Image 1 (cartoon, rainbow, N blue to C red):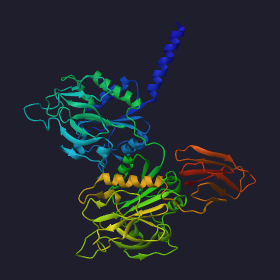
Image 2 (tube, rainbow, N blue to C red):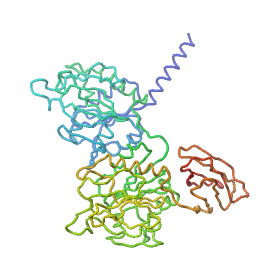
Image 3 (cartoon, rainbow, N blue to C red):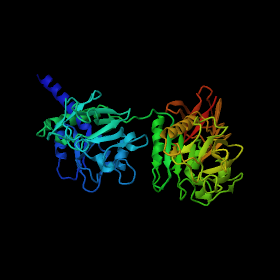
Image 4 (cartoon, rainbow, N blue to C red):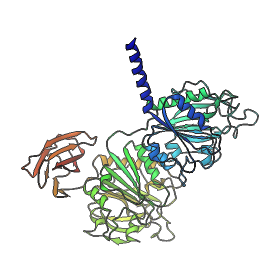
Length: 591
């Protein structure tokens, strides 16, 4: 009997410990004063899970606070005014801290009425790729509101919500409320990568089948007013308990998991645009759709340092149409990229700079010639900053650039022509390029003043385009598919080793060591030289982080050779540790 009791105690402790590990933060964003959040709190108490509550007064919780929890339930009840849920800027997305929490993999469940109305007003509103609501929430259309959009004479409000066929999470057979009907419940159409949980009913209701509960990855959206579930006349706490606990159980089981791209080639998107248009988000969408591992960095006051950049294989430095005080450039009198970006380029990282006016920011109006010894000439492959569309166009022919065309030397992209969300692009730069650079795009059409002038090129591992890639379109609206195609094809080419620094020998001066690796790229053997080899060792990693070589270096040697003939083509990382100090960089193997 004692053994059975001991076993039961152990099992009970294990169960309680598991629940205690998974934690939930309930955020009350309802300023209407009904205190409905307390019924959700009761459900959390009854669930046995670890939880805390925050009732927003004037400030929403910051990322550090939310990041202490595995799941956040953001409860709006029926408040549709001045919600802290949304960003307070012109950008239509969740507040920055909540978005950061989502991006970090936290599970977010937003429930209530009118939270869409708070940002968009009355339904219907359509969304598309590039919109936060579409990309993160999985909503393609905010289609209706119960009662507000019901046909008079049939129903006056939503009387029933039913589990959808794809709902494998909850066991409640139907949802009612403490009233006979729910007013201002939202109905949605959802994206193909979202999963429906609940839909409006019954079958003869005006919006029967319209989704009112769904999830996409780690973001759950329900317009159920969960704190007021009932039997049509009174609140039923047991129903609230059941729905809340089953959703948390599913979250803990990993049902609502952020789709993390597989480890491999990685891209950092740096937003250096202070004009506030948030165009970077469309490039971010392209990165999401590409399937590559990525991160974003929106520059506030400090540009990313080399250590940050060096975590990634490729950096897209996005300036949009900002032509003032860019962090792209060195702040000294020397005309070159900032120090960290230059070191990243020297370390074989691929850099793609795109936007308008980044040349104007440093040089003012065109034309400006460059020569051997100039950074723009030597590193970027530009011999002349020749013109800007619109600013230098001949009056009476074109007022801006209407078309960009792939150059004959462009073997990377398949897009047949580039237009924008406007009829013409203003302040797009045209370049003359060096004989060591390769043209990707040129200005068009044939009768344009600067037809044939290059506006996209690369030299080794530095790509320069003046395309404003976040605004590609059909001449009247943005076309996300074109942005997706261009971005993905450029990354695919980068991963394939197209943009490789031509180094017969690269010298990395690291404190007292002078480390030289050659040749780079290599196909057979690589040699690394250094000042001393005291307590020295080397490790080599492939793109997945797998160690492909590890060795101890002879203490009496100042040179180390290793064979790469059996390595697959691609980028590799090496780390030499000398006297407890580590030095890292990259090399490329080509076959």
